[in-house]
Image (cartoon, rainbow, N blue to C red; front, side):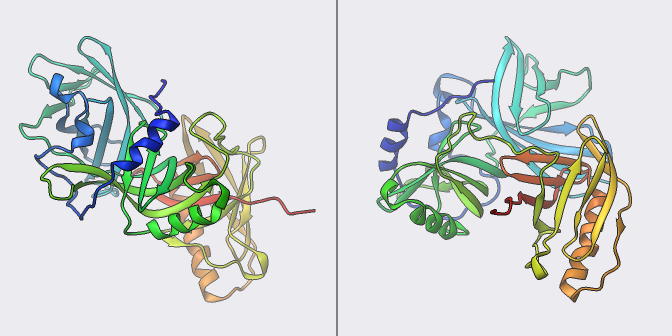
Amino acid sequence: MPFARLPLAALCASLLLLGACRSAPDTREEPVASDVVGEAAKSPYPASYAGELPCRDCERIEARLNLFGDGVYYLQETHRGGASDGVVSDDIGRWSRTGEKSLRLDGGRETPLLFDEDAGGALLSADGGSHRFERDATLRVLEPRIHLRGMFVALGGGARFHDCLTGRDIEVATDADYAALDRAYAANDPSSSGQPVLATVDGRIAQRPKTDSPQLQSALVVERFRKLWPGESCSARYVDADLFGTTWKLAQIDGRLAIAAPEGNPGTLMLDEGAQRASGSTGCNRYTSAFAMEDGQVRFSPAAMTRMACPAPAMLQETAFAAMLDKAARLKVSGQQLEVLDEAGAVIARFDVMPLPVE
């Protein structure tokens, strides 16, 4: 579906509206964030809901949902029971009405979520299930942790991030990994200083109080700066790399950064669609594995590996690499990055496109 885009002039003008901020907990009750109210004064939104969603490998998924008046939603899912007990995943996107009492949520999920609204304002799953989201009496705003891509700009002591998915223009907090993003932006091209540049980050959309005001405002906390994309924008020019036939270089596994590649031998993954074979290096030994993909799910067979001895850190990464292949359930490409997710939807490894050698 098409998303609202801010014109560049409007984006740059909004840079004047910057305020200080402090830390806040994961959910906030009133007062409502001033920049997410939007049309709320003329509509029943923003609103928050609590309910459950079905789960294939756990007892249930406890879910919380925010709907905002500007058409943005936040969704948080917490797995209960089973091997994924306690795993939390967040999603953001745009919601729209598909009928007088029907809602559609389009975000980072493979398929949209569909709900019907009853006379009391509760949301019921539109797939015929019995899952029901009750509206909270008091607004509770979530603070989603999510991979984001958008137009970043820094000017005059302040910074803004225009999220490509939701169309939101958000202040950027200066703590956590902001310094890495700011350094990359400053080093990008001195002649383009003050111009928006496409950036990808892992971050948290926090609700923080304004200076000398009880009102809250959204602020992007950059928990990990990923990459700048000079010359790109939120348009279709931001192209996903091909999942198949691309050599993916390991960047992170099991919550840790990949080790420095010994003797030019980084961890890699390459998928041959025709042969249904995966191959590459663990950062120590070479491996091959059969894989199967169906309905967005992936399964790898036990890998066959060479038996070379390596330094202890490389051997530990190799063990984690084999475990990652065993636990992998879904692959997600975002630009030049590949995420490997387990059954619970948790990211267990990240890869970047490996540049071709210069001839």
